[in-house]
Image (cartoon, rainbow, N blue to C red; front, side, top):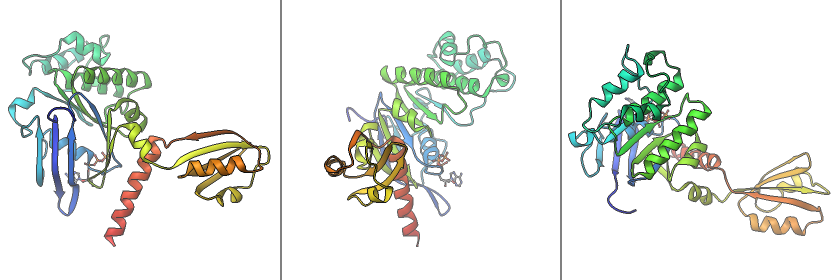
Length: 306
Ligand SMILES: Nc1ncnc2c1ncn2[C@@H]1O[C@H](COP(=O)(O)OP(=O)(O)OP(=O)(O)O)[C@@H](O)[C@H]1O
């Protein structure tokens, strides 16, 4: 990591009664990077975001934003947040909403730039309450950027956006990171995290279970998918009996296997008399990495509950 981290969580515990929403979370966010926080429902993502925004306080541990405690006045202008249930004030038009939020800051972004970011120039005189769900999310994004913040928190930002809005949205996010902004986002769309994030942090049960670039996370999972055609296709049982094969399925002309030891399996297949051709190997998708990580962790939790 270069330079001081923009945001640091140190051994954070956040308890609600007996429930630990965060259970010893250590995490540092790098400046100028897009970090995606992933985890199943209830993992603690919103709690982590809320701590950073000073919407709640930790039970123990310390959060700092640029070395300062969240909630400090100096930070208010520097953090922009788009939360899950952001709603525009009643009765205002899109333009009035953006002007209102611009008025809170000393150096706001220009209105035209915000309308462009939201893709709502044509709708600027419409009442914000009458916008579609996706348009409201885009307006919330522009509101988050009104003060030209250098740290941006996006909690499930693309829910309700159509495909085109999403890809435009991610383009703006990438451009913001390229210009040095630090971005923390939560999402359930793993393919978006894969495409957009410099770094992915997976939490489960309030604890960090993986941390790395999308490629590092995928490479960390030894399970690979391997498919091939065969002139004489063996039965699924026969494939399952091969050393290291964990799953086997024959579908039409193709066999699909899952294994942790691709090299050994390749040797066996090519040395067999099945007439193997069209071999393809795929590393784990981010989705399967996520499933393996969070299932393993839930399993541990269940065992330790007993
Ligand atoms: N105010 C609260 N009172 C009691 N429990 C809470 C409170 N806020 C969160 N929790 C609990 O803490 C845990 C973590 O919740 P959190 O909302 O941070 O998860 P999340 O990862 O954001 O989930 P989701 O993906 O569903 O949004 C959950 O078990 C939740 O029920």
